[in-house]
Structures are given as C-alpha cells and as structure tokens.
Length: 106
Image (cartoon, rainbow, N blue to C red; front, side, top):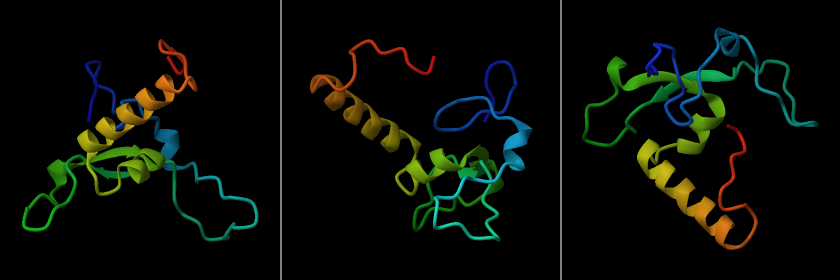
C-alpha cells in the first residue's frame, strides 16, 4: 500500500510507515514480559481478509502495516473494521464522550 507521494502506508490507518518500525519491538505489559518477544511495530497485513474457498493468500494481497492495526482488523477485513469503527465513534459522539468535530490526531 502506497500513498500518492509513493510512501508505504498502513492499510488501515493510512499513516506513513518508517523503517524503524521493523526493528522496534512492541512494548510488553508489566508482569507479562517474555525475554524472547519478537513482535515488532510493523508486520505483514492481509489487504483482503483470508476466506475459506477463496485463493487470496498471495503476495499481491499482503502489505506492511502496524501490528496494532492488524490486530484490530483480525479476520473481519479492512472495510468491515472501518464501518465498525465509524459506528463506535458515532455512538461515542452521540453520548458526549467525544466532540462532534474532533480533529485529534491530525
């Protein structure tokens, strides 16, 4: 996945990726750390989720993405995850937990 400028981006959040993410190990929760953790901030990400009976476990269906974004998408797929996230955000705005026109993160 590339943006218009040709930079590699995460398939879910569309943030530009840095090569440093391949070397930065994920933080471990206190008390649950293991000495041989090899999960880095970036990992391979299926663009279209894997499905039984569909031959989409191919190199063209892979991209680099954030470990956290990949965990959020899991087997649901990017579009279904974005639709779910929008419903969650809308409910939180409706309940007053977030401002309606939040620009945080931009």
